[in-house]
Length: 322
Length: 311
Image (cartoon, rainbow over all chains, first blue to last red):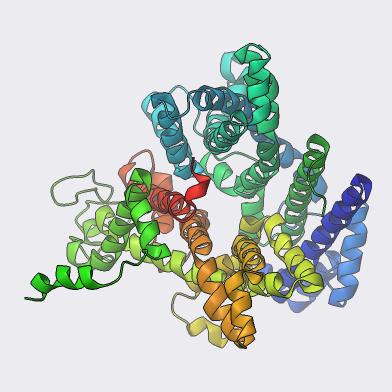
């Protein structure tokens, strides 16, 4: 099977995934009945007429299938409806909060990648040395330490004990640090990004080290060494490139894991991101917001998976497509 | 008496190579990380079983609240202090091991049943069935599982109001367990499929087919036992993962308010992190030890079952 056909197949599969999630989500939300009735249930002075008109206002009348197709139609026009609780366009909220989430996750994964390359080269080139065992042991421990616990420990140390880093939020409400908004925003990013970096570095290091150990034992590395290449070029030029292939597939998974657990990360740091927004939405049954946020998270995840699938083929033509 | 005769009996028996389980145990015993994992898991299991005998207080004892001793730092009476609800932190931590294990084992039992059935079917049947089932599994691997679980737990809590389901004790916890099981099966299915594919044409399976063994017996008595080692590793990993997931769901406030779980403690006490850090750190440490234990155990088991992987 050709590369183009493979990519086309992955694309179609990704689309099916997104449609599948949208159907499940819609069915689930509709299983609870009319959300307006639940939302207004305990308010005094609500008559049936009011419920009926509010239901109509949010387009919640009509049959389930009709509403599903109306919803999908408006999704395609990037219209996610209006949040019931916040009375703001959902698409606008998703962009604002989504950018806050990416603001900590993208730098975190970049930094983690750089650190783990350095550490795993250090460990793999000295296999079974003390450094190697130290790296494996600490990576294993770091891999098992749930991210949010690390976040709590960081807050205890750096915010409560030392009092040097802010424990919550993305910005100061007044008096930004050093009078500069940028410095203030960066300062708030330090703790959440460190937590994500630690979490990702541990996992990436475990993976990259074992991959590098495997590659360094292969014949072409011996050949490169025999031809008199300096060790630095053998490791960084030849071995690392090949060791990266399994890591690359894992990057998509890692990104998905970070995005999937964003609700936890952002609760720990009270970070105004997509995860925190999602929690608010399901707590308050903000129907359009729940659906919009879930769809965005799904699309981001599916895209990440698709990109890694494609990159995988692009890097290593030996991969059997199927 | 019987002890004295045993060596003679052993010596007289023809020498037989130790089976796969015994061989694996010999290898596992030499793996320090794996043994540490086994020790940690044993500790957690022992804690869960013995909780009523070692816990200094009852899990629902809030009497410290009445004495004005809530959020008290660790002392001789309350070894790990009290939390903002007046519970003894140490007691709640011990009892939390029970919930954690119930969640881990329950979720992975469900996941194993679904995973082995689907994966085994795909691997043994092959062709179109295989293709469809594996795409189905992939679907569950790509969707944002944690996010979906949060929404389902919340919505299901509303759906059941007024139905017979409401009378099930700890319904919320049950929901989480079943959901985790229903979402964590794809890795098991993939492994089961790979193993069934590998074993389908193994010599002993063909031999069994030749002497007319029924298909069901071939699948359940010849192929499945040989696929078990690889599956056990995944189950051990999954138990840790399920416990972590339940804790995160509870930490976000979607857990079972009636259950004594680490996630519930984290949720109730996180607001008091600054004044009573021990009430947050203790359940957190318990969670970490448990997850680390299962991860190390799974790692050790991988090495023990597949010695060729380790070089």
